[in-house]
Structure formats: structure tokens, C-alpha cells
Image (cartoon, rainbow, N blue to C red; front, side):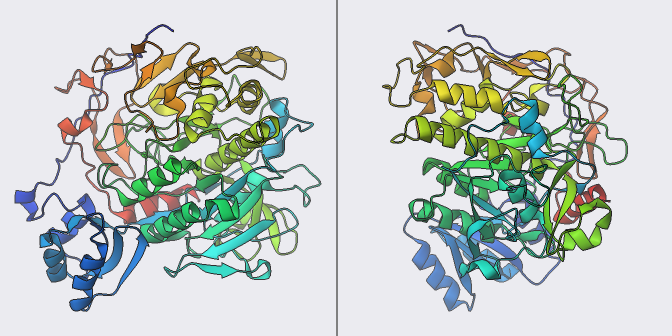
Length: 585
């Protein structure tokens, strides 16, 4: 395999603000950005915080908080959630058993009502109908605002984490007061009964496990999402959870290595669960649609997650007119400079189910296209929808692998690599916008069908030849044949070998040996003028500065962005929430 690197562009950020230092704000390295800002200028009597303790020290930290009269909950091992006053925050900060204090940030789904495209149309254009696989071997945990059972969606079991404690709900009590979770679940696994098969989900045979963490307004705390992820890991075997769909996020306030939500995602992938998450809807100026970079949200910055951006397909079978939707968040990620998203998928004009009484259905009735009792069909757009599509494709891949090799399981890394390798590159977009390219479900399934996971690590695992192209309509489209591994692009036939990189415990982006050579070190840089950045880098409604190529950061090693002290000028959730509200109008 040849060693090639992608040299794309120069990172030329003119930053309007610098990172908050300890001296400026009286905070320490233990605080994330949101906690640092609040501690400097408290706007409320307390802040919801996530407290990371040293391994095995959580009980001591919890006792010390109880002695101060603070109530706590524990969304995961070595993590506590609590409301802290400024005085108590300073006490916790000095505790030697505490590693870090992060904001228990509000997360929200990324959605905007729009026109229509059915997931079934996606499958038809890729030659997957009539179906060979329907996802019946896969279980998908949808961590969202709930899932309303209907003729289209059969959620096998549901749990509610919005009160901080998991509560099992029998089928008749399942609900989704916001509507977002049901819409995403429908894109994944709707039977299409309501629409006579027109709006069937990508994997109608997949089992849906509803883990509710968002309220009737589509918002929830990171601690509730973390609790749901922790529950999914602990009950993976009992509930048959193969995939977690996270069509939600919050601004990035700290590096991925200390972000509790990101670390929960990493733990899920380490446990063998494929985690699909949305990139965010902050890819450009809301008025002009001028592209902006750096809008990836947490946990979309998790290295091991499959982070999905949204495609605008213009409702055509041909792929030549597809573009990445203006709202789809682009990389790199704040603090770490990770390349994201990993892939893009149809996320504009998607039709799926919403409860008739849900907030989305009542506040945005213009998006409703079919009214049918308790559950209606509605058209929505967003990276939330794109993530649902990819979760459905992953379910099909798991189903195909299980039928061919019942005693084996593809690792999340292998599934992610197959999705990227078979993707179609977009002619007018860069890797920070499209990742490896547009999802190609037919191509990914062709790879799965040809691969035998039983083959020893390091050996060729193809059992039959694979043609690296897919017929869509009258077009024969070549696969991108690249895997965007962390901050490097791996070309060639790496996917045809059971490479150590696909192993369960290898973190995506870590240095690994491909065959007999190491394909990355410090040599991949952004340089030249090959990328048109637009006139500004935008986070929500905050202008970070013009991008004119005059920055001193002319040659930046991708992955070393922390050296630039990058920090958004305004990361309050109110800005992100307002941006989201603008998108749904």
C-alpha cells in the first residue's frame, strides 16, 4: 500500500478572543470553558456541574459534597452531577480527588422542517430494493426525546432518564413529547405501514430501544445523556444493543479527553457498540449561508464516533447535484483540531413519523404532510436526520455480517472504515466539510458481504472480489477508497486486510502500523490555497474573524490546534439554541 497524505489548505484563523487563563479568571485547569466563565462572573446562584473524580475516589468526593448539603447523582463511574454554588465550587476545586469540573451542558437535537425525501428513496437509488437485508439482527438505542410506538415504529423497550434515574416504561406508556426521537427512529426503522411503504426506514427490521434523555422542548442535560449511554453499555447483551444513535449535541467547552460526554461515547465504542452522532447544524451564516468552519458539537468530536454531516440531494436520483447542506457543521473540532465529520448522508427534506401531539408537530404544522391518528408524517432537515440514516445503514451492515458469519461481530472501527472507503467523494467539497464523502449504503454492504471477520489479524479477509464502484440510476460512481483516520488520509487497499487498526480497542486516529509502514507522524500539514473558506468562520451567530490568509498560522500541523489557543468568542447555549430556532422557521 502506498503512503500518501492529503495536503488540503492552510488553517488561517483570525481569532477574536483567546483562551481564558487561570490568572484572568481565578480558575484552574480543572474547569472547562463554561465553568470558568461562570466562576468569573456568576449569573445565577449555582451552576449544574459534572465532577470527574480520580478512579475509585467517587465515594469520598460524594461524601464531602453531602457534608456540604449538596445533593448528587452519578451518571457513570467516577462522575457526579450536582448543582454547585460558587463557594462550594471552590471547595470542590481544591479537592485532590477531583480531576475536573465540567458544565452539565444542555444538549439539543439538530432539526429544521423542510421539504421531503424518504429513506426508502435513498435505498431505491442505491439498488437496495427489493431488500436483501432489513436490519433484523441489529438493536439500535435511540437516545433522544423518546419514541412513540405506532403502526410504523415498534420500540421493543423504553427507559426514561430525564429525571436522572432510569425508569422502565411498558409499551403502552412510551411517549415522545417533543417528536424528534420518533422522527429519527422512523428514519432508522419505520415499517412504512402508514405510507404504504413509501416512507419506510432504512432498516425496518431493526429493533429500537428508546432511551429518553430530552424533554418536551428537545433539550436535556449532558448528565442524563451520559446516564443513558452508561445504561446502554451495562445492558448491551441483555437488550441486544449494537448501535447508539445520538442526534444531539452541545458546544465544545473543553478537549475531548476531558469532556465527560465524549468519554462516555468512547467507553461505549470500547464496549463494542457503534456510536453514530450528528455533526451539528452550525456550518454557516444563518442569513447568507456563507460557510463557516469549526462548528462541530460535542459529542461529535469523539474520535471513535461516526460523526455525520448532512447532504442536500435536491430530491434527484443522480448524485451529481448533491451538495453538503449549508447548515451542516464542518471541522476541525475546537481545542483538539480533529478532522470531523467522518461522513455525510441525506439530511435535508427527510420524511418520517412524529407524534401528533408533540411540540414539533404543533409548533411547526407546515411540515406535516400526512395526518394519521396519533402519529403523523412530517418533513424535517438536520444533521440529526443524517445520523439516523447512517444508523440505519449500520444496522443493515450488522445484519449482513450476522447472516454470513453468525458467530462473529464486526468492530465499530471496521464498520466506520467500510462506510468511509465505499463513500462517494464530493467534487466541490473539502475533507473538513464532507469527511470521507457521501454515504454509499450499497457499497458498504458489498464490502460486508465480501469480508470474513474470522480471518486472522494481519491477513487478507476478502472472500470474493469487490468492484470499487456502485451503479446508481444510469451512473456508475467510483468509491472514494479512502479512510480518514484521525488527521491522516489512508488510501489504497487497507480495508481488504484484517488490519490491527480495525481492532476493538484501537482508538480511531491513534498511531498504528499499516502493513510494514507507519503512515503518519508530523508530516501532514495544511498548506496552499486550495480551500475556499468563505469570508468568515462562524459559531452560531458569533463572528470569529475574517479568513484572509494573513494569519501567522500559515503552516499548522493538523491535530496541534491547541497550540493556537483557539476558543469561540461566544459559546453560551442561548446562542446555539437561538440558531437552532432560526433553522426551524
